[in-house]
Image (cartoon, rainbow, N blue to C red):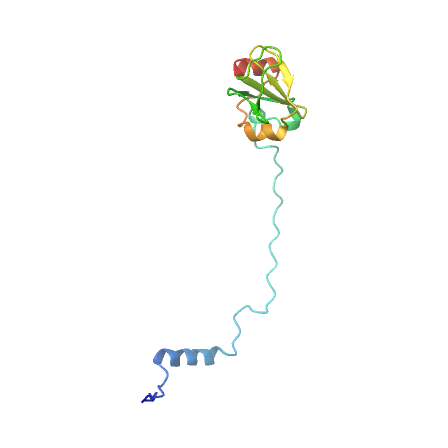
Length: 147
């Protein structure tokens, strides 16, 4: 019923024969430079020490050199499901948010300030954009932001 198929033993192909010859020739050879000691690196002259690459007028003060940061917040501020309103005048939008000494302060357009303990500097850093200017005084910063 089933017929066996006799397989003829074929001779290796030309490519297989060439590979076997090459393998036999390279069997005991070692690549050049293998086992030799590596060359000593040439001594390099030390680089010149340069001050800072930025001129002083382009340097930005670091976070420990700044007394505080401020950003405008035009929309209402909702914390814990409650809209924050000014304790004195009742306004609830167009805040100036101040971050100083690890505390967050809210300032309304009328100039009333109140500390907001539900916010921290991590919240401020997540929600503030990059600083576009630095100012020598608080009043200069207020003028820059239009307050």
